[in-house]
Image 1 (cartoon, rainbow, N blue to C red):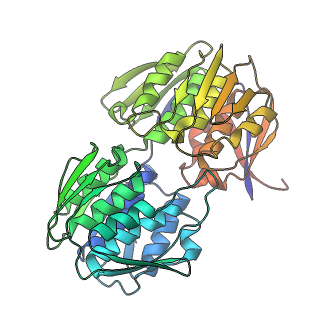
Image 2 (cartoon, one colour):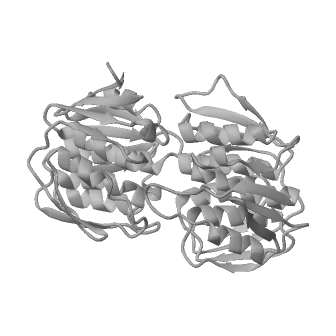
Image 3 (cartoon, rainbow, N blue to C red):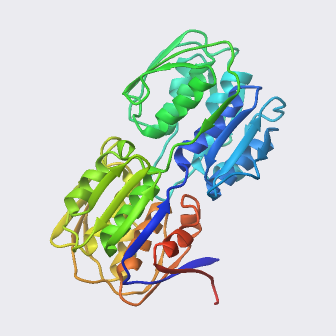
Length: 425
């Protein structure tokens, strides 16, 4: 099992290219199920989760070709779903990546049936799929839960008015994809507004879907008989961009995050400016510099455009070495403070009171061996390790590999001393 070894204390300097967004690429890959024609997708990050989704789709009979000429380490994929022969998402794959449930809507819409394993438990908290199921039932689907599987059937889905009980990104995406081939008009109220939802909508529109309102809390989809192929480029990863911006705020220095889009990053940039990060938005990225110790900031996670829960661990690492005391309130996932105990091992002064972390900044952290508990916790520990005195070893970085493309290489290109080592070495 791999781990990161970080020798902290160096400022970051240089340019880093932001990869394609994992959380946009995964639903867009699933959108290939909606057409028999080829869907060409560019800027796909070569991540573990993307590999899992490719394995899932290939198991259904999709042909997936990788363009050997892809640049900047990102993949260009051609997906052909003209010979799908297995309408099932098995537990073995769904249990490793909850986004696998995104095949449910497309399969049901195009083929009239689907068999998808229930995702099961999740380390950071409950993420039920009941909103997906209720929305599809409102569109006329017959759905049973049997032996841990969602069994869904529909001769053809019907347009419906759907109001979700909570804002759900994957739920919005699943229902939006299903509605593309439904008979009539579907209105999704309380829809997620995240940029990744907009990116999926733009891809579907390129395939011939009729969608309006993406990026607002009401999405309207007028169903069509069929979708066609398209050529589409995935948006840059706003969470990866935010992670590198937090890293330079913590360590000091100056970086250019090539490809980062300020208009997609919501409250992340506001809080980083408040902490003292100087940023210049450019046509092809964000130039960011930090010349002084961060100032503590108060953060409350919320659906977009609020502060992303996926940035909570990273901003906590910044607060850990900031001037003053900052409050971090987690409103999305009930178990997303598991990194706190690990940050304490590095010398961070953090107290937990229910859903609130009280972070009293210290002048320095000290290296220690810590354990990553989930994807974004891993990123927070990496930032903490970059500013800690001495050596920090981070175990279980397979969590990190799910969502960050070659992170150690990118950090080394910015002057950080980070290496990937095998246990026992």
